[in-house]
Image 1: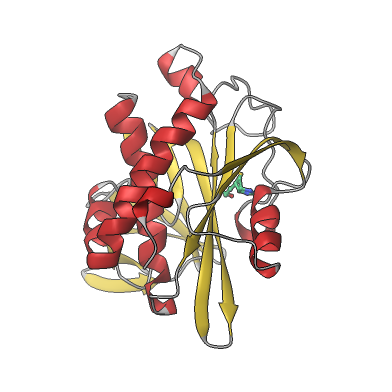
Image 2: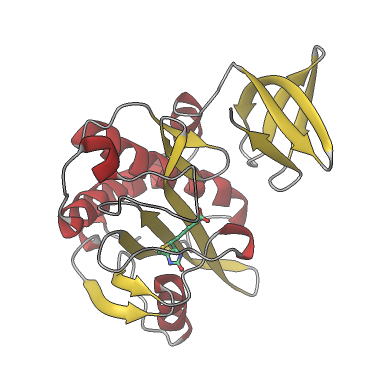
Length: 250
Ligand code: BTN
């Protein structure tokens, strides 16, 4: 069973890399990966976001990291719960250690401060045969960058707290949090779904969303274990998977 103490023990720090997630995957494929091993870079030339998007971040101003987890003890069906664990860990660091107000999780795996995105998470899995061997938690947290010319709904810790932050300290605290949360994950993975829903942006509120080219609305009830969002539309509960709809925030 992987040990919590492994977290944060080894951090590979790089000036520049294509993507910390790619680097982590290469280590896994070469048999060099260890549970808790973390890669952090100042700059990524091909930073990856969700849905094949790029993740662009100014050099040395943000936390760009990938944490390797040993997932052999789990069924691949629990992968959304691992996503919940990661989202909850980032949210709690920002709320509890940095006192950032209005932090929430936007389904499925964005972290928001108010109505703006402050962090994104990209989890990639390594599967051998039918075995889920490793997960790579790729985390991009906007720290000291203050302008986001190409994105109008992004923010950073500096924009919210009006103060520069030490990136390595944030990483150390985050790894501590992920380490202890992973211990809890081994005992009770579903408990993170409860926390995830507690931190969910717009829960129990009327929301608008796009389904194909149709604009719809309903009450966001919750997200379930499989990662489907449940929305009450005209008194009927409907479930949507990721990419089937796009949430619109005012
Ligand atoms: C998103 O689209 O919101 C997910 C962004 C994830 C970005 C991080 S930065 C560190 C890690 N390496 C990558 O190439 N992507 C993730």
